[in-house]
Image 1 (cartoon, rainbow, N blue to C red):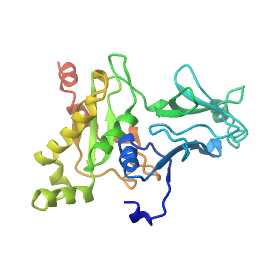
Image 2 (cartoon, rainbow, N blue to C red; image 1 turned 135 degrees about the vertical axis):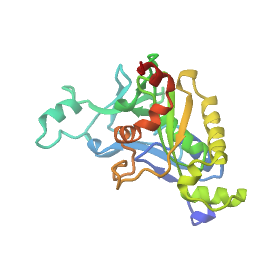
Image 3 (cartoon, helix red, strand yellow; image 1 turned 180 degrees about the vertical axis):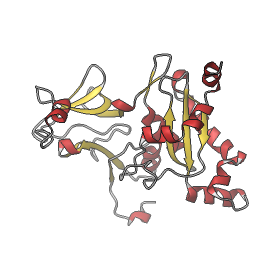
Image 4 (cartoon, rainbow, N blue to C red; image 1 turned 90 degrees about the horizontal axis):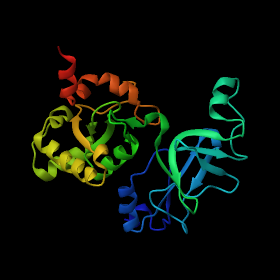
Length: 270
C-alpha cells in the first residue's frame, strides 16, 4: 500500500471534514499514517493538528502555539489567539455573534479536550439532534462511522430531531456498487434499481447493525431508506465543498423520512 503512494510516504494530513475513526485505523494498520487536523476560515485556517510523534486517532490533535482553547458550558469549542479574525468586514451583527467581548471565537462546533490538550470534534452545534425523549445525538459522528463501515455508502443523512428515534437516508456509491455486483455475480442494474435490491439492503443492514453495536440505545439507527440517486451540488443538496445541506435534503425527502415514522403519521390522522 505504501508503494502505491510512491514508496517514500511518511504521513497524510486530513482536514475540512471529519475522518471516520475506522478509516484512520485501517490505514494506520498498514503503516500509512493519517494526521487529522482542524481549523476555520475565521481562525486563519489550521489551529490544531496531530503530529507524527504525537498522534491520537479520533482527535484533531493539540492546538498550535499561541492558540487558546476552551469548551463552553453547552459543549461549544471556543478559541482565542493572534490568528483569530478581528471580525467580518462590514458585518457588525455577525461579528458580535461570532466573537464575544473577551475575544473568544465561537466556532459553532461541539467537542471535548482531554488532559493533554487533544481536541475531539463531535458535531456542529446547530446540527445536534434532540430526540423527543430529550436525548442529544451527534449526526455527523454517526454518518462518518456508517460510511466507514460500508464501501457501498456514498452519503448519509442521520435524522431524528424531535422524533421518537433516529433514522437515516443513505445513497449508494456507483463504483463500489459495481465492484460489489461483479463479486456477487449480479446482473447489471441502474443505481435506482440497486436502491431497491434486497441484497444491497441486507448488506447495508449489516453495516447499520455494526454501527448500532457501539452506540447507546437512544442513538441507534432504527430505520434507514436508500435513495435512488446520489445527492448533488447541481440539485442544491451539497455545498461546493460537497457537504450535505441538511435542511434542504430533509425538506426534499420529507416523504421518505415521514414514512420511517408510521406512528407519527397515525397520530396525525383523525
